[in-house]
Length: 124
Image (cartoon, rainbow, N blue to C red):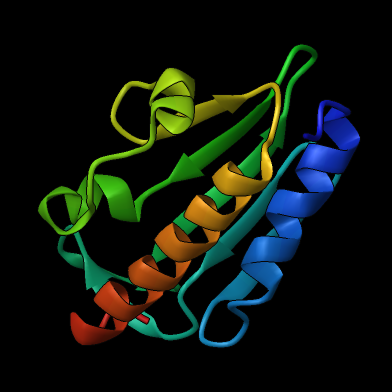
């Protein structure tokens, strides 16, 4: 189990890096790692370059994972494990203080499902 916040942040970023392409890194600095789609799409009545997908944001007590597909395609996601449910705050924000191998695998599967759903909906 990973409890070091930098290690958790690095692991989460690597999970998203494995989905590039079709995702692309939109921001990568000390405050945020953000991935989006790689093409221009219509969003809220205007064209945007890269539909938002997810962000990894370090905080003093945890690592925040903002994962938009679980919000935009909630019915397509299976029930979360108890460990991930405990981390979910709101509809799409996870506050991660520890990362077990099973959580890591579940997040990887969630990311891959999100990519497939967004591709099917022509968002990425």
